[in-house]
Image (tube, rainbow, N blue to C red; front, side, top):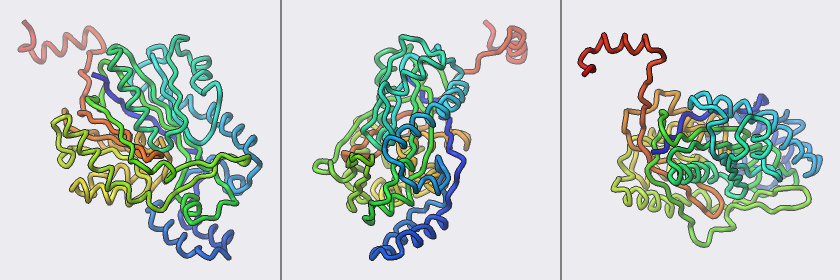
Length: 371
């Protein structure tokens, strides 16, 4: 059974607080007729700070899509390998042990994908499969987990590497002045996450089932307009209410597995905003505390798109994980409106003695194990 191991996460060094964001909005958009509404929406996100790839002065300057995409490629190549190495170390594997790389990102474009560059520069095998996903937005974190799970189900001895690289600040558009865009300017942050899914062994979430659901007639609620200046984010005001149709999809998936989605031990959810978590708490009838890992990501990093789910899981690991066989739900939501969901149990890898002498010592201490 495939096990999702501890994710490694990295955020850039430049930090902007919510107060600095609000002051900046007041300065830049002083004459905007809906500025008070935008400021109130930003404050209500619960975001305290975000990490940006570049200093705020450079982030606000638009040097053209070509320059921004070149920055995306350069920074991805400079920052992703260290995160991957930590994920491999946490999973106790080497690059040579990986059979497929699932790479997700919606904030820059490369062809060949970064996966090809990684295989050439990080000692991955030349027959490593590549699954780059560029158009699922924030849902891509859940989709990456699900596609890795599918691969490890088809090839039970295989290991998958998941990488999410999101530089949302490179999508800032100074001419987009709708309330939704102003809100986004105070919500999204930059981050990189990587995690290994082991086909055998490993400590983490042993996945048992996954599924997808698309809410009908919502394809234009979260979208990009792709123009000469790059990606222009479109956010419909109805998006925060999408948990009402999506919560039943979560319950349906759990029901297919003979689980009750309202009575699980842990929930790792993409937090696009606080209302997503508040509504899930309401519709699933679970306490708000159940989403503390997702809320912490939102508070400390903002919405880091596809990397949110992996960061929330990382926080669960850092808290000590869960009881062995504890049941949980992982889910990412994004354009479509799409939900990518999975179910799994917490599992702890059996410890293998490091040396023969240690094995002998263990047997002496527990003679009942002999024979």
